[in-house]
Image (cartoon, rainbow, N blue to C red; front, side, top):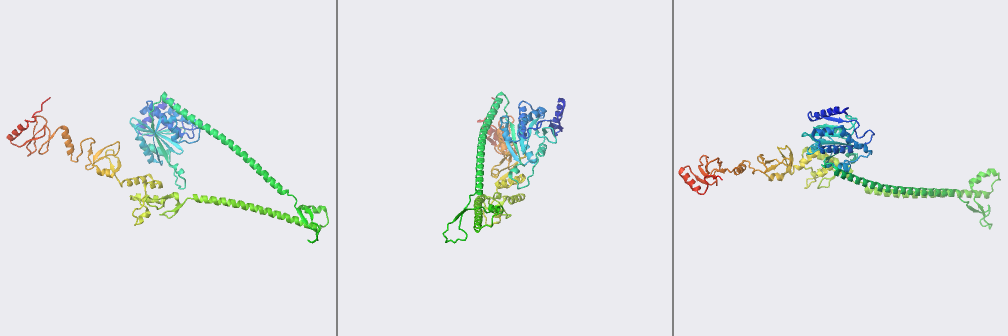
Length: 619
């Protein structure tokens, strides 16, 4: 049944009463939703406030219960519009997009003062996992709630007692196709039905790609935080303490903000200073490059010395000094000057200038080549040093003893008591095969083929948990591991089974159910129930009969041990067993005489009751 927002108060009451009757009497599912009550609100805030809404749902319902609301009244209030608005009102104050963990939200005084963390459970979302989670929730005597986190969504599942019946309420602050206008309440009394609804809301995310990191694999799991009421009655003193704790927490956060602001301002000023120094260094470097460029373009003339044309080296004429004229510039001006054909001396000057210019170019090229080679050598040394460092940190590899392929060292699986290495995929397939064959322990495959190996390696439980197997396969592993030193005991009273130590079972004659809530005991030999604290058990009932005889004051015949009860009369008792003919005293149990002759009987009775009472003397 799906109930939307009612139009009037009377319509709301009738719809609520009809839904509660369908849930409790007809065992149907009920869904309640009110428009405008989702975590997003009218302004679109609270995008990541599902954790706040879930914990606030638990706090509000537990507070209603502590105020005295019980049974159907508590259920009606829990699914009312006022409660839905009160729950989701906290989402409007949270405008951040950051997703907070459940434990971080719980530690604020508002929730920590009213909710007590009972435990945390982890698993892979699915119908069986959610059924186990709800069964654990059902086993708690008081009202309880589990906050289920499957990133990025958080839901709450509450368990309350209504007229002795466990009722589950799933609170979902998100809008869904079944309740598109606001938060939804899903109510049911059936564990499988609620588990199925949770599996539908939190489907399994299949990360079958093994190349994904383990952080991505964690996104497919869920966590369940179980909370119960703390039991603190809200009064003025408790509210004062809550306000004080909140104020101290706020003061500490403001102190942290002030300190971080101071650090940020210091770092900002330091960044500005460093940026200014960087700009000055860049400007200085730019000016230096400009100076070098200008100096290379405006180089002073190179003085040349030559002899007059046609003179010999032995001639004593002086050397003629002339400045070097740029060959290119001179040639460009020759046509304009219309000078006559240059003399041989001018040709020497021009040739010398050309040779000097070519030599300078070659020298510059050689210097640039030397500089480039120096830079190459420096970079090559740096790269070789980096390559050496990377070689030190490079992960070692090993060869699997089954598939004979090489794998990284962090993918290795080594059995106990041997040093053989295998990849995790091969060991996982080996373990699953042995589990299907119900063969235990699982030995190292390399040690198994070595006949001379006296102490082969064994696959341990720790290694099985590392390689990763399914829950069903791990349950078979635990059963086979326990069967080596334990016995499965089944209690016929609570209908549960548990493994018990073999030595304990062999040394005792009485078996007791290991469940604390049962404590049923029975005989290991005859399987009969035993009353704990009663008489010592015997399979033939003799011990119980002795206890009953002593408790009632009955007597055994001294001769044939037949139980005899005195109803009335004197203390002279006669055994009626055929052929016994024993007479004894009911007070002391002593045999008086064994005879069928009246004279012997009278003589024995007279002699005995001279020292014992024949009749009971009333007080």
